[in-house]
Image (cartoon, rainbow, N blue to C red; front, top):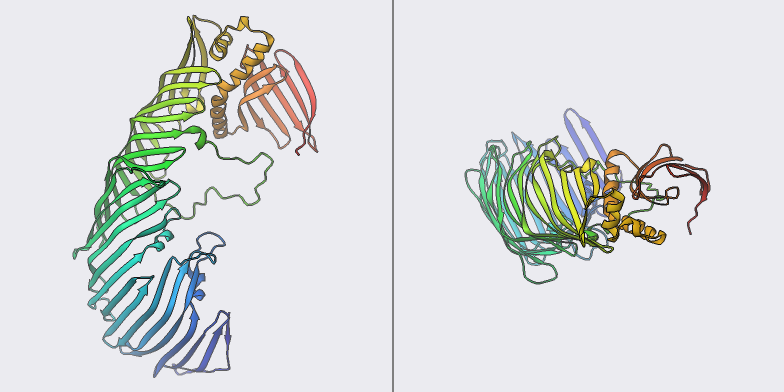
Length: 580
């Protein structure tokens, strides 16, 4: 807060204002004094040792409860007096050193300066202003501006900038770590205050940084911006990506385009091209891409993205991608994140993109060793669901729990359909002597159907026995039937996962593999809580043709009543559960 150091005289009348000896002291340090005889002699302001932290409240928060930290103090000496249609006086701001940090614990500043001086001389005809400061360790900024008071006054000025430390780039993205390089600029101001013109150039060289989330490094980065008198700027740049842990890198990504600021229809136009660019290199995901994209943007309109991206090489480990730890069902989140709160309005996207998947794209994990290939056209319009046309082919084998399935036919197809709901046509099979057993999965992802079969033809139960254990059902003992249940569970684990995800989309609480005491084995079923205490589920046996309806009612203190009614028998039980 601020405290008046001593009583001050104040008078106002007849259009004149007088203020004598008004000095305020800040609780953060420093003082600010003002004397006024307005309008005759103007306003005099003196500030001594004012901490820059006073301005921290005006900066946007990085995230709730985490403000920026401003270091340094400033001194102010200003005199302002009206004269005609302009002003006379002067303004001077000095600061020995200061900077901006991301937190109190941050060891180094994102941006730092020394010997900052801002001076402005006010004349009836206009203003002359200069700015000078040393930036970070070896950087420097010098700027001058000369202009008049009206909107049509000529504008003249120059900016010279040289920065060796680029840590401040971390302000724009939390994924950028320890950026390095040299930024230089020499810009000239022209035109008028109402229609300024910028000329000159800016150049970034030797740029490199690390993107830990993608496990890659950006090397040999260069960006050249040439400002032209017609109000446009040419942009050209390139980067090379390499694995963060070292090793051979990927290709070079190039950007060419223009930026305009005088009301053109497309003020930003970029062409992004590259070949075999390493885009991600984590243990669970490795991929290179060859983009050929066009980006266009105009204020007030959607961001337009067109072109194609070819993925010639990728390695995807499904087990690592799916290894995130989920909270148990009894975890209560007191302050959940609002799923609609994205941290600010995102720019709407108008996209027409062709995705080509090359022959060297592989998926592994959960017993799957397969490749992908194909081509998709992806369309996105503001206010509409993303849709696709085209297909992706799956080829390879599924090996797990003693099963060896070959994917004979595998295709995901879209015909201007929602991107998340393609048509699936999958045939996987295994050969045991003279018998071939397999499974057909067809339909949309939102309503998949699976059918187990065998050749020579047999019942689905018999086919399932051949598929999972490689033996006919009639030859199995009771113990082997239990083994068949386990093998069936292993085989359908992936289907259970898929079913659970589909269940989430249509509002079910459970969908997938379950256990039934009444049927004595595994069932594929669905379940729903009708109230916080009442649960209902329905399942179909994986062996035979049994069906079961289950009702479960939660009493209290871990007790519940469970009733199962099936085509084989009816059961009832009182259960008690506790956690240690």
